[in-house]
Image (cartoon, rainbow, N blue to C red):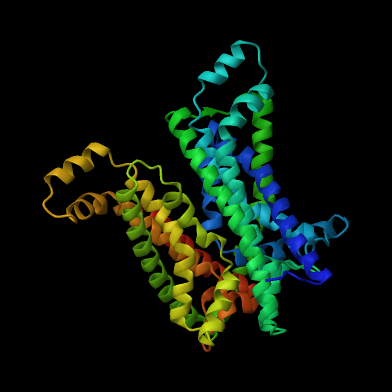
Length: 478
């Protein structure tokens, strides 16, 4: 297959890679200080601050994009405040800067979460020894801490890169004239120009790039796992914020996050008031909720089933945790598949999307997230327990049923909630499949925003967010 594209399409490919790299840089720049703060310091509001780590998982990208428009748009909160103080209006939302800003702030909690977990378990002995020998804070960070954080930080960065690389809805809503990504071009090549050959070439190209990133991610995860086993200790207790300088910097950073990150979400909440009564009168609203819950339950159940079967297989086949391909690389391959491309394949094969195909595509793309949670629980089972159970068991299925299933009970609920939230917040696949007379809540919200009914879209988005976050939080408590 020859990858012959016009100059415009090569610019699109270049733009896709550049915006993903810059977005990842922003996420790292914000996520690393946040990770250090939540890992090493105690301060008022820390628990609430830590809640934002769940935002990328239970708040759909559509809702973030909608909040950014309502907050930073021409008639948004920021420009209304600027007008009151006779300041120039902010006009850069529908631009490269607007896209990478939204991506960076939407994904920085991923960096924050992974860095915080790693940072909290770094043993202090090496840093203390370096400090006694006269090393300064920056040198200790550069030569010791950063080295210990590097595998976790790199793997988190690649994951963020992939999310930004495959971004569709945010680019579709915020991409100005001449700003498009490969995902958007694939969608338009099929839906607008009906150029299947070009769509296939673009999809193959982005899949190859994503496969390279997934391969690198899995290798880094392997190194991070080894590093955690050798170098990391039990979680180190956080210290209180002390000193005027540290208190001021902490307060400024938390305020920065509240203004620039929480602001759009709070704006959606505020704008939704007064629109729920109008929303309830819309004919398709209740039906969209039923559709969302139905698809979410079926998708989550299939994801948990698939993830469980594969996790049990890997755990029994690779008890010494050395099979890199089975344990890390293979389950991450679906992450390299474009949701737009997956939906288009269904259309090309079956002619038209339906509810069953929507559930199948979401399951194929989301099951690795269920697998990761279940395999983590299985890997904590002591080897002696499994060996004793195997010796005392008369049937081959006794160990999986009597040991693995009870141990993974909490992980099953957590994986179900996680996959349900991802399914409920997915706008891309339902939009690509265009199922006749079928609308999910996320698609319903997107169409309201496209019709410039922003207040109603905010109300529908809040219902979607509460549904996703509620199930997600319930799964975490089980």
